[in-house]
Length: 391
Image (cartoon, rainbow, N blue to C red):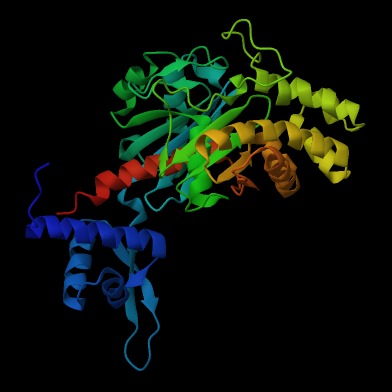
């Protein structure tokens, strides 16, 4: 690969990008603080800030009280320099959030997908409403990331198949890009939850970990070397199909809810487990798996928690002996409801059957992890574009 010479323009781009990243992660900084963190002189850091301010990327953000001299001006990234949208698509709802370039969510709306019909119109309607609530034009959005249930083809970016979202199929991405622009990305929902966990949760700063999403359906997000592992066809993480001793193998893989691990820890299995351990809650009638797990934990039902932990440990152990991620985060309805108690019991159960003994942690993400992960992914793309084009 040919090396790019260190031209003044390239060096300015590198310095600008470093400064903008610092202003995002460290908050408003003075010229002197920015110079110290980047290693630039006061003169150079002053020129850099003036250049970025002229481009509308940096703005004054108050003053820092000093000693005897005048207060030092603070500078921060201009929140209105770019916006992104993140969406979560479910069978009965589509939620869209708009965030500014700093990551602050300024609007969030939920629409009924039956109101608009086809997926392209549904997404367009949700984004339009979110922009209206935020008071910005749709054209100001730099990137859209959409989280869906199902398998997304890494080669094309299209949804290969989704049992829960049959109208999401090959061709949807092209329609969305025609309407919204080229920077539209569709991503598996659990992969986005993994990004949120890395940015805000129990895997913050980790380059290698797995997130086990448990609820009515099961999923797995894998981060290796700081990058999501999707597999050749996008099928990495379909852990519901994991073969489990004692559970029948599916006779037809296209039939939903028939995978062996799904049979072991899915909704029907957990309702039966709750009844066997005497868990009493109205949620057993409403089929709310998160509710019954919360009820069992709150009641101190050790038998149910240990049995559930043993079942989840089968999946965690299988992932650990193949990938050895070191950290597995329990997320989804069951993982969130079970909390730290369930995570600790799963870790203990895995240690009895798995030589690698991973740390098992409960999710640390507050709010909607899929939506938050979609915003993280959209911001990454938008910042790459905006922060790399400063000179």
